[in-house]
Image (cartoon, rainbow, N blue to C red; front, side):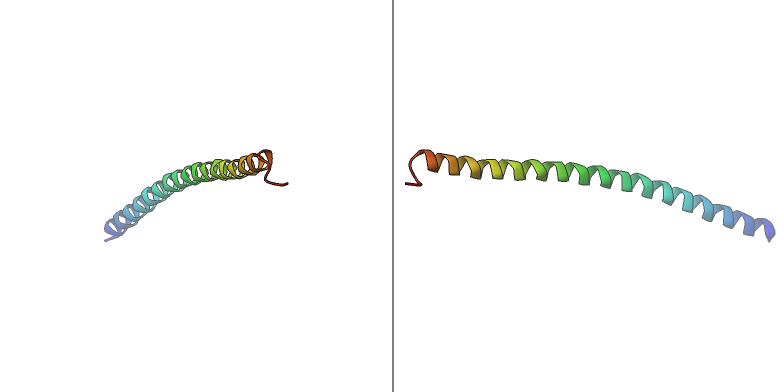
Length: 66
């Protein structure tokens, strides 16, 4: 009975360690993906703002503010 109880506890500890290791890898992957998404959004915003500024400069150069 005691040996059975110890085996059950050992199996539970192994399961917890495995789950914890999987969760750590998952958190790392999610952090990497979020970082990549943030970088992409940063460049997208820069491109949009740059396009709007170029449109304003083009409008001004063609005499739009006269």
